[in-house]
Length: 580
Image 1 (cartoon, helix red, strand yellow):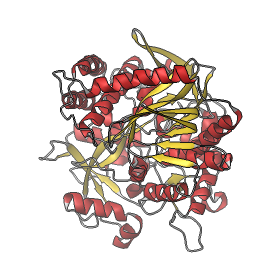
Image 2 (cartoon, rainbow, N blue to C red; image 1 turned 30 degrees about the vertical axis):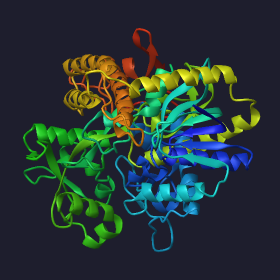
Image 3 (cartoon, rainbow, N blue to C red; image 1 turned 180 degrees about the horizontal axis):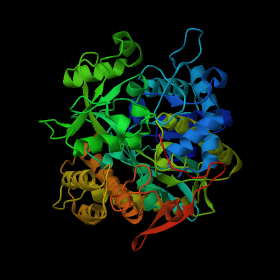
Image 4 (spheres, rainbow, N blue to C red; image 1 turned 90 degrees about the vertical axis):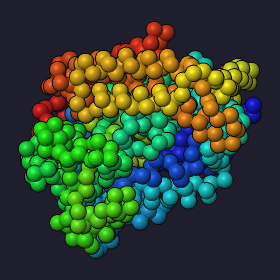
């Protein structure tokens, strides 16, 4: 096994990870060794799939906007579960992040006088989402990657799958990963680490997420005994293409698209009269499923999925070509449908993980309620600051990734510059060797269960019992079933014994992570006896601030999962009834 020493290791290569790497390098001024470790090639990270845009108050007078209004929209959108000090940090930092990407060369859509254009998004009081057509994530990633390659102090390890965090006491000293090209195991020893591995919506089969979004960093943190927060809140994006689940950006509604049922009715008036299609995502997703349950949906004969329509036919075709070109390309290529002429079949799909690794407002990973881990940060979707609470507003995610990518990268670099050796060589090597042995046990596994059978069973449980609407009986079935699947994982076999790009092996590790993430989600959801944001329970249809205005904290224990709860930080906005 090869041991590699770095000052800063960044695990993950999406917008949060690459932003962290660049800012760590800038602060280090060539005096740090920085590693970016990714299970994919960097430019295949899921951030490239972000379509609609990034939020920020750029022109308060012209747009009749303010940072306080952005913060209020976010807090209200979160169903009052967001930590308001974190929300204020988000809205104060977001405009500078948009300008940062402007300087890196992102080709923002602009107005006639050169101002960056901003479009409406759900739950936002005014248009404040900057965008580059409907390929914003791709252009942001491309600009980051171009910048990254000019930093000689950053080493990129593409296609290295991390399996474990090496922890001793109150510190993470590095990670263990294997090279997908040859299965060689490597230990990355580091003074500081940033975890930026993205979300976990692949616990569902119908999802807008790529197959790589398997919650790896969150699952590793959980197994290392770190607190995981608010995982019961999984966002369902209202408009995913039937039957593939490919994202149809909220920008399609921001640019004027309508939602219609089988009777041709623009039904959102019944659910959010003032916002219509631009209500927050949890409200729109529930409205769509309600229409389907009322018999006003259509059924796709290939997949069996029920759906409603997104209608863009009334929009100027030139507007679609200018501002929604990828949506047109996707629908033509995937279902042979021109959105300027035909309605798009859509339904809600798992999209974003509001919960994640428990961090403080500075992105430092927390050991408990008051103590941060030494030299360890998390940023992006895998981290729960909490800035989104129980429901994220669209376009706040790219702002979150950028703001806390910067914070985490600079903090990790500053810590590395001021600290001594990363870890005692003997204890680090022993822990790494133990993990290498565990990796080979998976490689050599000769049980009787296919990991893919476990994944398919997980999908059935999550889609049936943990979807947009939940109930106590269904959640009980899910948690029991997931526990059984986790036990069966001990008896898996790896059919492919090849060493070069063994996808069977990689996916076995990913399925292991999915099972752990789904376990936390189902157990946390079963215990939260209210409906708030993305968590809607039939037996508890109302939000219950008296009992449940608090964050869920999950920590792995010998008996399973130990749950506790922490207060929501309220600075300005007291909870009120959420109307749109």
